Image (cartoon, rainbow, N blue to C red):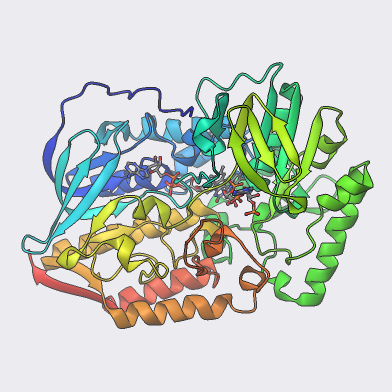
Length: 536
Ligand code: FAD
Ligand code: NAP
């Protein structure tokens, strides 16, 4: 299996033993911002990152075609106002290299790298009940003792490899979209197979088809996909966004999905905006009639773009509503099926039975490939956390506690795991929002909470069963009646993509603005629902 971890950037370093105020796991958008905020408080820190570099999602997902599915002027940090004015994204929804460049620039500009060890994976975090401290260990033999543990481990950072018999026997190149090697994958003259037609599959398929001799696409479920409105950034629009960035940020923070929807009057006198990308109008999709007409719209769109009616039919979802899975934003996806070098294998006519040394065996026959791409997604939201041996009070593991579905008050703190903060954890808007907005809000919340605890000499912050339970009920309540929880819906939001994972709708669909208000109220009410205890 290829991966982009080509030996650590800090290979051969001596294992560390450090006592710090905060351990931050992850150097993506969240971990970097956390380091920036906590350092300004004068806290001692250690950041730990499994990858060789900063960027998180934008470091690991370098498959061809990877790009943002929301407008990039909105998908940017708000904390550095000078940078907001200086930086220019070349396209409306930027491609992975541009976002990676931006994140690296932020890391350099604020000198954030020096707080991290790279190429280092946290293997365990154990709470010491007597000392009220976390003992954190890594795969490189490091041992850290910390008062607070901030899990900036991401929601979509634990790649999913389905348990297909024979998966280890394949002799060609096998690669996951979420672990795409830095040096790329040689596809020239190769027979390539790809399993999965979610966002990663749909974004990469046109590029794989253009590069490979032949591309075979193994599709289990077709997805609803809309054409991406990607254009070069209009300087006039950009200038107006920059003049109004404070207003844009306020609009984001009070919105449903973390996108301002800022518009301006174009040269033709018409109102123009960049739209909402993949997060477009999901609340409206709860209306069954509207949803039906959207389904029809998609069907017509596919039929108008795919020449072969039988292939078009296979690409049209029929058995679940629009909005159940994340809407995909595509470029040239459907036209790819008009190419001579592309074969669609509709797995609903006979599923994958095994992977062999030379390819994929399905109930419809065998398909030989030289390269096999897994666009099979992630163990979302919980996977990055449950893959670490996290033990809270009394030695209880987080994985055990969450076996029946994740529980965390406001998606931030899970009862029994004091002083551990989950950035964009399950039960918060997280993946149903423009995530930078939600990340900044969580990191700001944690920064304020640590400040409060230090000012009051408080030893621990935890939550109660009751607070956690009533928040879980609320998260559930607001999701009922939406396409996300339709009985016919199977999505990673529900954990349905992972064998054996309990079906629970994980993110908070009540809206970014409403969620922020709730967090602010909780703080105003003296951290209602949290338990602040002991003295340091
Ligand atoms: P991540 O970027 O996932 O970073 C977490 C980091 O933690 C990773 O680098 C990982 O290596 C590290 N880590 C995890 N576990 C450990 C461990 N045990 N030890 C050490 N390190 C560890 N969101 C949007 O809002 N808009 C988009 O357009 C968008 N596009 C996306 C495209 C793709 C392909 C994917 C996969 C996700 C996309 N997302 C998008 C969601 C995206 O994950 C977030 O926007 C954001 O980048 C998350 O940042 P993060 O820092 O929270 O997590
Ligand atoms: P995904 O949405 O979970 O899609 C995984 C695909 O693999 C699905 O088509 C799934 O089919 C298929 N699959 C899984 N196991 C399979 C098996 N055993 N046999 C056959 N097919 C199998 O994952 P993703 O595409 O990586 O996207 C995950 C999320 O990351 C997105 O929803 C989005 O939030 C984010 N993302 C965003 C962008 C962007 O545009 N900015 C790009 C990529 C990812 P089923 O549907 O039948 O399960």
